[in-house]
Image 1 (tube, rainbow, N blue to C red):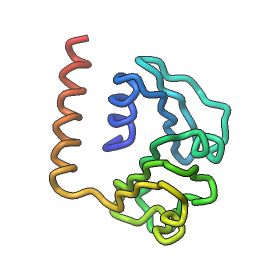
Image 2 (image 1 turned 180 degrees about the vertical axis):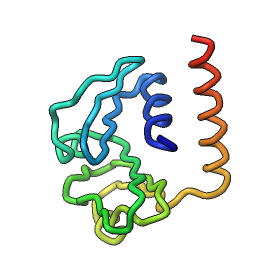
Image 3 (image 1 turned 60 degrees about the vertical axis):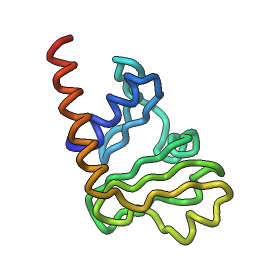
Length: 121
């Protein structure tokens, strides 16, 4: 609810097809529409051009065998959700290992914008 849902909504509203994956569900978000997704986590990751991980536990690791070449992978969790050494073996992958204070501030700003825009809608 802090990063995932607002970020997914903003990306979807900007025209991206977003797979929002949590422990018990997968949703496909597309410009104001949210639908249950019948794809597996593996299928969603394989179909993604950009992957943003934010799992708040040190025990979770994204399976790097699912990540396609030339994918952008960003970790917004305090924990490393991906094996960086394995990830960087994939051709063309761009990796952002963690976000800094400016990124957090921008996420907060965007969340406020989202709330304001939603209230006006």
